Amino acid sequence: YNGGATAATVDTIQHEEKWSPAGIGLLGSMDKIGMTMAAAFWGYMLQRYSSKLLLCIGLLVNSASTMAFGTLRNPTAMCLAKLLIGFTESLQWVWAPLWIGKWATAESLPIWMNLSGGGVSSGVGNGLGTIIAGYTTAQGFSYEFAFQIEASVLFLLSLPLLVTSEDMLIYRDDAAPPVKIKSPVKRVVRLSDGSLDEHLVDAAGQPSQPSVRPAPKETVASQLGELWGNPLFCRCAMAYASANYVNSALQFLWVRIFMELWDMDKDYCVTSFLVISASSGALGILAASCQKVERDHAGKLSTLRFVHKAFSGAVLGALVVVVGVMPQLHRSEASSLEQRSLLTTWVGLSLVLVGVTAVPGLLQILCIESVEDPELRSFATGLAQGANNFLGFAMGPMVPQLMMDFLECHLGWGHEKALVSALVTALLGTSMGAFCTTLAVAAVDFCHVPSASDLEGETESTSISHVSGSEGECSSRSFPEPVGNYRS
Image (cartoon, rainbow, N blue to C red; front, side, top):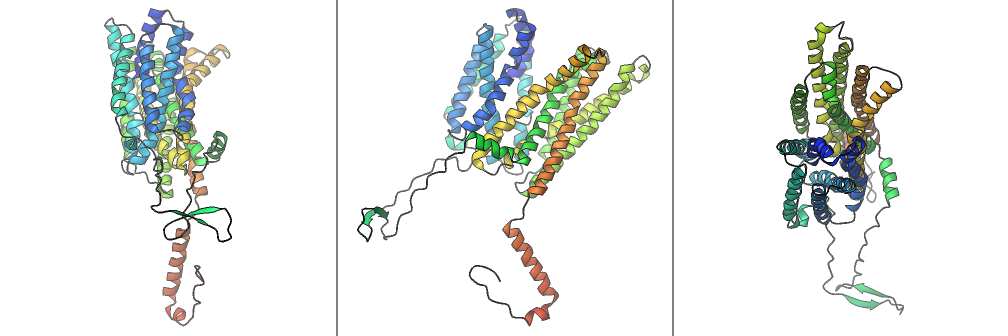
């Protein structure tokens, strides 16, 4: 909601407060900067503190920051409030996938992951913020009103969170504090040698089990090293960021592409974006939700292959987009192909959006499941979300724009040619995602080592087949008896 409301009120804020273009751009990106800074921090804090405590504090600070943003008119205070909004929002992005991964079944896991972090909730909230903020400012209200509504709703939501049981908010099985059970009868005995050392024994005279202290938590450096040495996690995190890079870049370039290459009105450009992105996104999320995610090796491999197919379809769509856009660079010679090239471009963009919206939820699941240590998963999720916020959401608009400015200012390219190059730069994210998932599939195949039960089952099946094939010969032989706990 906050992102949509900010986008819909940028012109009003700039007009009312006399912001410079650079200042208004910085204000719009402060929440993304806060989310990137805080993602790994919240993952580390979730290892050490109660989920309910952090969520309650985060939601209250978020509502207070939103109210400050919608009340204060000082530029420095507004930027700081926006930074705190993103800082506290990041906690939800880190905690929610872990919580869903614990409580959802294998059949419903993709559905819930797509509903939360896969784009449905953020898309609905963004649209709601855009509608409310755009309508209220169009009716003469100040930009503050939309954010004051948001702050009030967030404060009301914090009340049921405060009374929610902590057991309902844990995200791993060992998150509950251990219960200390005391022996009903204990007595102190001395060693037979008369030493002064004393030991606790139970009523039967057996030494009582000493309390086991939890292993000290690893340092940040050791956790970073462990995650860096996990190829499946690194490649899935990069693929996750690549998908959102394409999404955010296309959203940034869409209106300009069709206004300047096809001379379409802005209303038609916006309508085409809403229709194509909504229908393609719904189709991609529906396809991903039908994918059953198993936590074993075969399940991970099946999910990765689905993600790879989705990225491959997006790469095909990117090639179709290039074929559709190229004739518009020579409109004077090929004006009769304008409508055909427009339809071709729309079809290609639909394929791209189906592919890149189908994979974020599944890649979040793979990032979590690739980390075996439950203590490390919160920190790993924080890093994955941080990489997604920076390489995906932040670099998506920035890299194509930088490429466009470089080609125009330093190489002297025309505006339309530079704009098409920026679009191609955005579509290259599909190839990066396909490349990362290819390496991830290779990592799963390479790292999989058959378990002892698998080897035992294979040995037994081989022995049974051998015995059934030569029953007479085996019955005449005498086999040695097992020694100890080992089979002969």
